[in-house]
Amino acid sequence: MNEELAALLGTPWFGQRTTVQLAETLSLAGLRIFLFLISVLALRRGKGLFLQRHGWSHRLAGLLLLIWLIIGVMFVVVDVRQDQPTVTLSRLHILLYDVVLGCLGTAATLSAARDFPHKYVKNARKGQSGTLEEAAIVTQSEMIEHSFYQFLNLWQALYLHSVASTTLSASSAGVVDGDSMLWSLLSWTALGIVTLPWWVRKSWFPVHSFSANWKTNSMEEDTRLRSSVELLLYRIKKWQYVFYKHVILHGVNLTLATRPSQLVHTRSWRIFWIALNMSYVMEFFLQSMVKNKRLGVLSQAAMLCLQRLLMTSSSMAALTILGNVRPELCLLSLVLNFWRRHHDVTNTLFIGGVMIVIDQYRQRQSE
Image 1 (cartoon, one colour):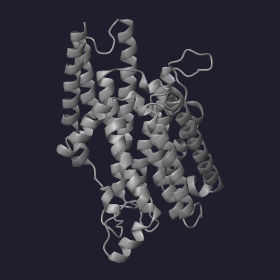
Image 2 (tube, helix red, strand yellow):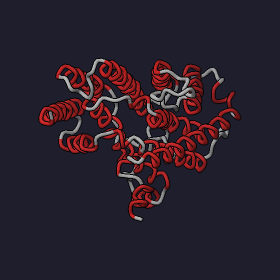
Image 3 (cartoon, one colour):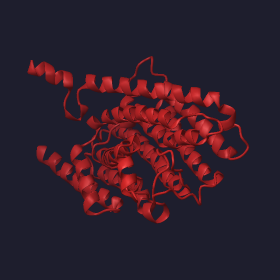
Image 4 (cartoon, helix red, strand yellow):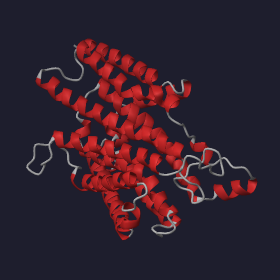
């Protein structure tokens, strides 16, 4: 009985394949329902949202990105590692999809910062985000900060595809799992390159604290905020960000530097990657629809319901990735982040270098 229960629930880090498949199915269904609802809302007010002359470049980028996400969630969620007749997408197709997705996300964000006059917007609380609260507005500095993460998605995608490509080449040459010093050195160098954008994170881009969304100026406001759905969602978003940074970003990058694989071609990653990029852009798009009172596209209550659906689907997609990362590397990344804040590049290179040396030593001991 205990063995049957353990098999049903799966192992920690979602190692049981049936559990992963269930999470994949539920998350993909949630993402498709979410995009269907968004598409219906957008089509009803398509002229006002996408065909106005003011801010035309952002409207065009946003429309193309929405179409590209729909294509992704319908067709680019296969496991291209499997040599099956039903798998018609090649590795090159997946690479091109990810590059276009990253470019469109970055273009949509930067064009919004340029086309709309949010430079002088100031919300009631300093540093307050405008992505969830009805009374707040997304500021230009939020858009610029967001562009950093959009570019980071593109940068990581290129890294994942390069690792997958070199893994195939190394396997055919008989070099597997970093069993040569040259391979280890190249992996460590690639890890430094993919982490390099964090070097300019604080000096080139604005930084917004999640806590600014629940710091209040009065007891009355504090009481109202503590009982709000928005506060709960902001707190969830904070811990989703911590999970993203130390598991999905640094954790995945470190894992692939020490144990290269074709993670980017798995169905779990395809679903998660679309969910991540969708979450990035939709928090701004949903708020835009709420703020546009003239068109009457979306109410605040409906927006929060859609946010819950997207956050739940994205969280399930993220959990399916856990079996593909080394938990000790994620934990070390988190610990070093609290000990040496804003030193992501040196922290990550230190962890990667130490683990590569340890893995090399263990391999030689086992020979």
